[in-house]
Image (cartoon, rainbow, N blue to C red; front, side, top):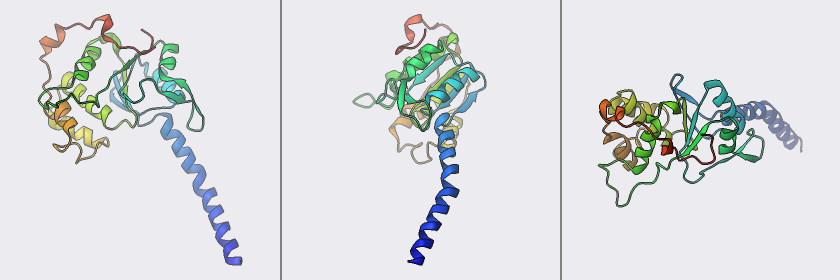
Length: 220
């Protein structure tokens, strides 16, 4: 009996010691999920934040466009905090703060797969990024690792002159995983390894039009 009491007390003490720091860590993690500065004052990436985290990020970094890459969740209903219940749509937060909201679906490969050509979503992505009024931009998916990583790599190659090797190294360093960021992954082949950036003249000759933004209830 005494040993059982000691065991229960030990578990209770452990819960008191470990529980609050873990809860604080999870709350902070969810608040601004994997938020990273790609290009200062211009391009940011993250996972799916809480509503409070999104508001803070938009206001702190003066975000003008939020691009959501989750086809399974076109307009996420977010928790205000990690502890709360889902209650506010992402597009609503964007509209309240006069921010454009755009949905892209870069995790759906064309069928049959032609790995020599980028998916149609890449063209839509470039149309959005060609518009200088869109910046600063926040790009996110659910975890902020894979879909976000692939399109960040395209941004680096297209607009910052990075080579494929540099883009892949950053991809892996930000959690994509070494094995999946290889020829074992069709997405990597299509989005990164075979990607050919446009010439600067071609980019400059293609001004973005107002209709390029496929907004979902966001501000314009």
